[in-house]
Every structure is written in C-alpha cells, then in structure tokens.
Image (tube, rainbow, N blue to C red; front, side, top):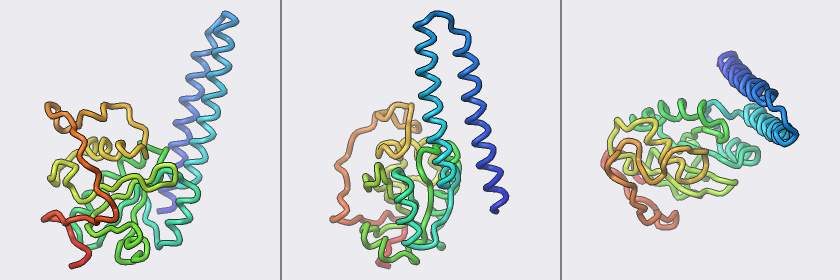
Length: 216
C-alpha cells in the first residue's frame, strides 16, 4: 500500500513539473518588454503554486486515506486548512459508495485533504460535530467546519449519483476549487439549484430512510 501511494505521489509531482515546464516554454516565446515582464510574473506565480502543490502532496493530499483516531484528525487539520472528511460505519453500504467517489476526487483536487474516519471509533469527534447520520461528509474550509453532506439527500436522494454531482455539492463549501456552475447541478441539467436553508449543527439531523442513525 505504501509503495502504491509513493507511486501515486511521484506521478502527481511529475505531472505538475511537466505542466510548469510547458507553460515556461510557451512564455519563452514572448518578445516585447511588456510580455517579458508578464512572463516573469507568470513564472513566479506558477512556481509559487507549484511549491504549494508539492507541500500538499507531502501532507498526504492527492490520496484518500483513513485516519485512525481523533488525534490524527486534529494533526491533519493543523497541516491542511481544507478537508473533506467522510464519517462512516463498516456496515453501511452507502459509505462504500461514498468511498468510491472520494477516491476519484482526492486525486483530482489536491488542494484539499480527503480522508475518512470510523464514527464508532471517534465518538468524541463525532459528538463534537453533532453527527447523527451516516454517511456524513464534513467539509472544512480555512480550518473551519463550513458544511455537512448528510446522507444522499443533497445528491439526488439516490445511490447512483455521479462523482460530478458529489464534486459540485462539495464545492459549495469552498473546500475545493470548482470551475463549473454552482447554480446548476451536473446531474439535473434543467433544474437550477435552489439554496435551501442550511442545516445547523446544534439542531442535529434527521435520518434518511436508507442511512444509518447513530442513535440506533
């Protein structure tokens, strides 16, 4: 497993370097003083972004991993301001569906740390976040918990939602960069997104029929 993750990180780093080299080669063709200044500014911006991406990869971004306990979660939160954390239970089939999609998104969005924790093994954290339904995805932006995806209600209330649908829903928290239209769900082309009142943590959550209530 460690060898596979090493290869994934190496491949991601190589891709970043290749993109940087290609952009530098393109900017090398500029001639005028103004374009040269623009080229230098762009190169510096890209180098800064490249350094940030390398730091993300060193902190475990780019892969979807399981955290052992609350201590590890808080250690991760110190290094990664943007986190997508899946709270799951082993017996939940829907949690396995979430796993499948988050593995794909973790590789695509290295600007955020994608991880999961077993809710039954992290009771303090689960209670602190008032998580009552599994699966729940906690969305952390700039080291603050901004939003929760509770069950599959926001994903079309079905088990066969697309990875793009979950990506779109996560993007509403700002935890990941998104180039699409936040007002237009990718799976519902003709139905514009209507902002619903945000669920409050203090109020707790009701369980979807196919999701697991922690109080059970």
